[in-house]
Image (cartoon, rainbow, N blue to C red; front, side):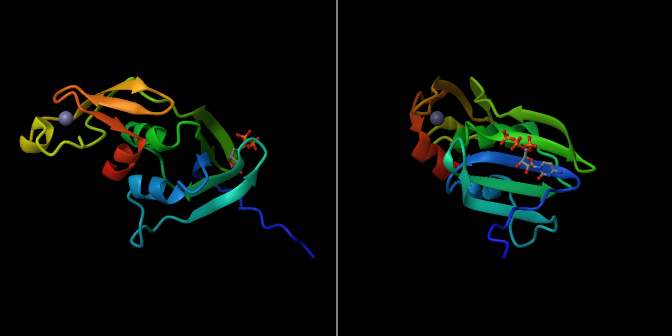
Length: 153
Ligand code: CTP
Ligand code: ZN
């Protein structure tokens, strides 16, 4: 009897691997994928991983990621790797990287911040610390920690 069920390889699309255990659904939210999504998607949650003990993995057929989406993913999965697959072969593979400056990516936690009050003003954050992750709003100078970032994505 086959005792392991591997997540199938994909033909064309994107694999987001090495997501911290339990964070895959948040990544799905970042990618705005829900019951209306028509792509084939495989999600592994808390699957065994040599490096991480447990990890999450998402495989999406026929979808490319935009830079702003990769930036958002880096905030909750700074160790994630992204593979682009074409006709079953990986044509590109890279690790996500936390940008030192995030423009228009995260909503400031401060409801009085000008970026929340005036429509054309984009949010603008500087990376203060990677581990634990802390970013600072360039307008109101308020810091946001990982928990606050996650709840604002
Ligand atoms: N993958 C896939 N479909 C393909 C090719 C690769 O779903 N046609 C997936 C693999 O299952 C893996 C990821 O893309 O989750 C990266 O593939 P690869 O670099 O071959 O895997 P590993 O060597 O295990 O990479 P790592 O060291 O990053 O775990
Ligand atoms: Zn602010």
